[in-house]
Image 1 (cartoon, rainbow, N blue to C red):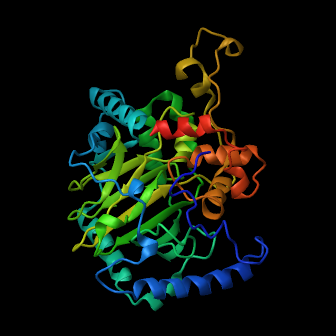
Image 2 (cartoon, helix red, strand yellow):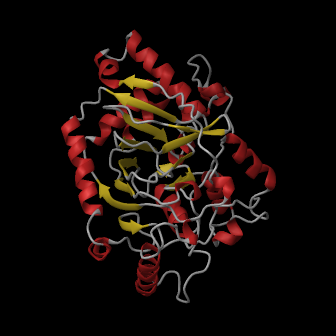
Image 3 (cartoon, helix red, strand yellow):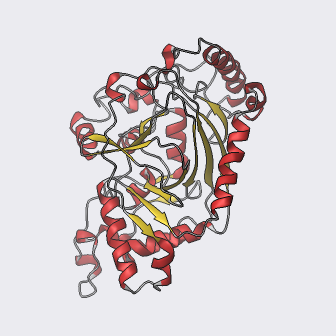
Length: 394
């Protein structure tokens, strides 16, 4: 695999502290002390210049396009009232499928979320991030964990740091099936089996805070990456933009729309669709004088659930022909091996910094017997042609 400018750059997983990787308690103590010192050093530096660890390579800090991303806005309320068999539902399905096959993002309205509740949630998150750093650190994320407070991810990386703070926590709620049922409905019968796939999973809620930055042109709030989860629902701050998606070779903004939620495809759903629908490659930029907030919901399956495409998606062109015997149907080649959500989460938290190639690198890592990250992402484990194909996907 060719060198990626932001893949594992400065990752603490590549240079672990001198304790056994399975000795989580000792590792947590040492890394926490290191992270505390790093946060104090970074946040305490001069106000008119960003510290060097926040400076991103020019290749990852390309200028933003003024052309807004062509992402459909779907009224889910109207589509659901259409009982699934009317013109509204068919049109919504066409728009969503086209977006998912192209860049992996669309927006929804008519979802029933109370605007006052949305504003209160954003304001509540802002209140947390205004607390003293020492207070927020009491909720810091343990190494390898998906939940807790993180400041610029200094507990995981030493360079290309994101200009942000996050607070993440696990989310279990029976209302989750509403999101899945709608999404699988508009994508068609091939995806119906996925309706139960997430029924007992544990998803993740995350509050994002991007402070005002003295040199926004030299850093990023979030680097280019695809979400490892299946789907992401994002509530953007209605006053400040920052989300950008790579489309047609340029970074295009996804500007906040009143009352809209952003929905984007993640790597897990890309694997479930056998590559038919693409993970959304996105990033977040920051501003010189304005802070930005957002709330994200990452839909995840149960940790031990095996991720594999439904059988109907593996027939020729993803179509099921009732008049052809099952054994005679032409099978599509599998793009990704079977895996569990726990394996992918472990890979991205301990071995690999999420980027445009995460899913392909993960498949190579599994094929190599899940060795250390250096071995899994070397040219010996992943040939260059496969890596080039992954780059071309986005």
